[in-house]
Image (cartoon, rainbow, N blue to C red):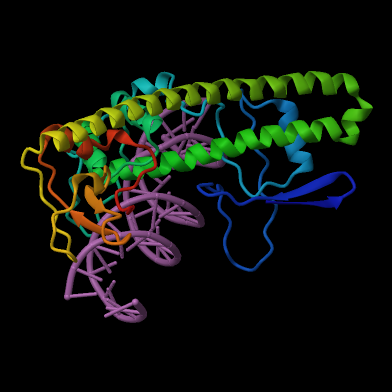
Length: 302
DNA sequence: AAGACACCTGCCATTACCTCA
DNA sequence: AGTGAGGTAATGGCAGGTGTC
């Protein structure tokens, strides 16, 4: 992001942000383009902030509608949503098929939002399962998450701009001239920021609980592994490739994500990784479920 | 060990469809 | 009924990571 003074009373702001969807889009030709339109007026958008942004900042793009970051479409239109999914795939016979616009049902949206709250990206297994549950194609679920991530980033940019607006408000010349207005406007901005803070706190609380349950599960699985080692019931004996001796069980560690057993510290610190089958169904199930870990991608390696 | 290749996935910019005022 | 704006599902291209040969 770059902020530069273009005149004595205005700032020019350019900003690039991952996932930020520019709309309307500008042609990439070299010709100078007219300035982009100011942010839209909406019920949830403070008018004074609109004025601040309109007059003081030139935004690269703006596409924000509501403060609620996990907003589900509501109102009369919601009732009219039609369900369309895998059964809505007929193609016209003449040339290219007409591009049909899927409208997700209320229930589909709800489940997708719920899933998004748990994790912002899906591994292939989760995607398949969700698609099956929603009667959609996996690709549609994938696209929904991509678009949702973009909206999520856009909304966070909005909150960032709110904060920026507050700073500008407090230090701008015009607000110094009208301190009474400044107070009111600052209160409204603070209200919006407090609402965001509250939501962030709730998200934090949720993540804490999730982390706690994962820690507990990890502890339980480690206990189980220890018990299995103690019992020595048909453990897969790992032979050292160098000494041809069985490796002691205590030198084995298993990565819960990639299901690899790593042996360490035996052959003068060498490390060898072996993919193994998981015999214990409980452990196998626990490992395979991955517990919906957010932002962990299946192609990541350890 | 290094490089070429295929495959998968996410991101981005954009398009196209749909709804609503 | 026509129209423009806004929302969003969908598309296509690109880049990066990974596995295989």
